[in-house]
Length: 225
Picture (cartoon, one colour):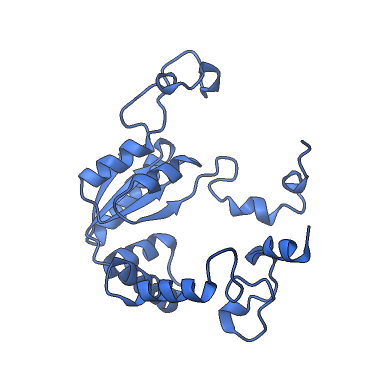
């Protein structure tokens, strides 16, 4: 592998300068802010994106709202409160909730909080449609509990029903890995996340990263082909 090829494989996780934030250091040679990769000219890409942020429209509205909330409430508001503040700043009145069945109680509480803050909510549970997993080709041995009806998670129908409900902003509450991807793909409204599912770590997936040097050393063990 040439030095250029090796350099092109480097990305932001390999950088220890982080000069893109305060510009008080220097950009490394491989920095994605200053070094083009492939056919795309990075200066042209930055200019195109800046135009999106500066032209009136929903993208500009969301970018401004997110930046204002960060600046005003940094370290002051919970994620629940930030979502409410974001919704109000972008003019969202009806909040869709795509919820995991295992987190329906949390969704009920969230719905009450939204109502208390003057926002309407509309929730769709992951098992909506009640389609057995085997009906789409999932083998019976891949059911969590075998020998009975077990509905597949249905993020596409969740998205379609929230689209029909004409929600202004959709919130994910604990959808499974991959199901969240499908939901985001099929949602008409912009999507944010309140809870990211981690069944082992009490829905705190970052804990695996914090403990990868000791309790979860297996995460850094290289897999053999």
